[in-house]
Image (cartoon, rainbow, N blue to C red; front, side, top):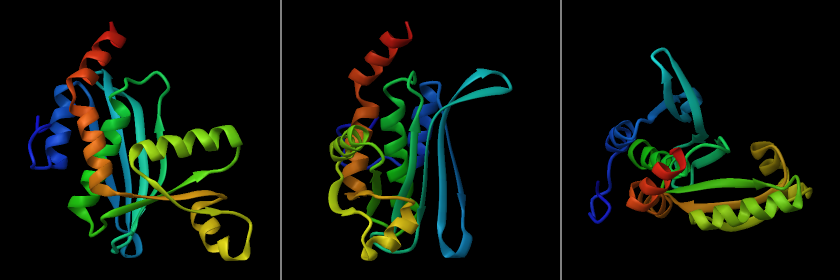
Amino acid sequence: MLIESKEKPSLDQIEREAFERNLILRIKVGRPLNLWALRLVVAEQIEPDKVKILGEMKAWAYPEKRGFQLDTMKVLPKASLKVGPLIWAATMAWARESTPCTEARLLAIKDDPYKHAKLTRYFRWQGFKTIKDVGAGPSDLPLRLIWGGAGTLMIGNCDVVFKKNYLRWASRETQEINQQSSA
């Protein structure tokens, strides 16, 4: 693994590392209207012809520096602690390798004050910073249409988010925690 290396691992390498840990990492990309539509999935093989999806990221991008838009991230509550960092690292690796995007945007949906506070704290921990609160004002209408609601619009540098999460994914501590939780 390339934890100490200055070289950034490729998405192919991350996929091989996931396979070595008995995880399946798959990416589906569409190109409607000169956009990239991404669905990244992490799963585990539970039978020869059956997999269990542990987590996923849905996103889309347009060819600009700030064109990477993260839409949905889900991780099963009982999934290993390594699944979230794997999804984040692989998503950012994909953006770096496949698009001109260097920054990712997301909206921490504000449907419940407690959940919203938890989401914004989590995204800050990932390396995202608040751009603005998207509310009910007329100037927020375009953003509400894009994101589907009100909340806190945040931005993160793809390299920073990648590095934080790749280190979490590749760390020995994460491996040991995951081995203990599956025992």
